[in-house]
Length: 315
Image 1 (cartoon, rainbow, N blue to C red):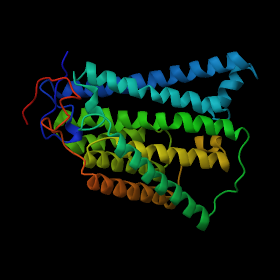
Image 2 (image 1 turned 45 degrees about the vertical axis):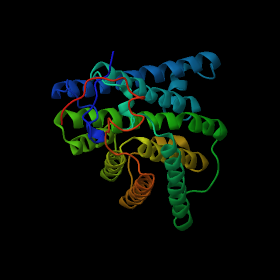
Image 3 (image 1 turned 30 degrees about the horizontal axis):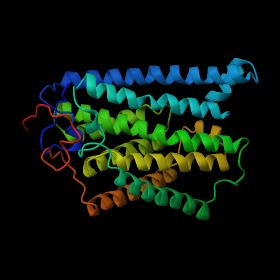
Image 4 (image 1 turned 135 degrees about the horizontal axis):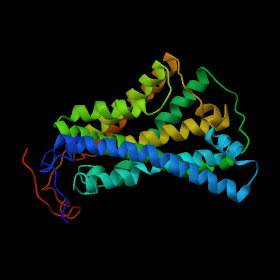
């Protein structure tokens, strides 16, 4: 069955707007997606922890589960990341079932993932986030380097699953949710702001500085996705932010301590937001240098080979 096409010239946040678009369909998709996410994260996490405990039986299950949930055991982080990874199939299914569109448009206006740009963005993000952390520790050291118990197993989990978890959050929040809500009202900014707000609120208990930090990250990532026409830069920034944060925590204060963070000082929040701004500005500059397409162009060379021809829409 052919997938419905976005309007020629549409920006990324409106790529799900097609001939069948009505506001309630997008709202239904957003509610359904969030509900599935909350359900599956819990189920997958519990299943993974239960299987791990069944195979090892180190302590009673209640204690083991509490330790896993607190990230005192690597399986807890592993289970959480796998649960969040369900956002990827959830997002793809919503695009197909609710919007009757091809999933390629979820990744960029090309459509599909622009792999060379993604690799460059990963390099840029690595320099920014590692560099910011190094500067912070050089001028205001916060902790002594002393790897926590089981650090190498934690590190393996971080390296193997944190990129998937970060990509899943970007695909749902800056991808599906931003496109669905933006397309519902035909206003790109609406999708950017509302998806950032939901992203920040779903992170649980937090003081105002931490909420502003997460909301700012969502806004900057959403704006960047809009400007460059795809998710690659947002995914790269999110992946490196998480790798550096969890890796440094494992080397100093402990990953369990990072799990319990519910507040930041305004200075800490501001420094992190500065890192987001620098990363966004650099990757936007890279996109301009690479002359990436930032709007849907149905007549562009190679586009028709990536999609199944469907009905177009009028602007």
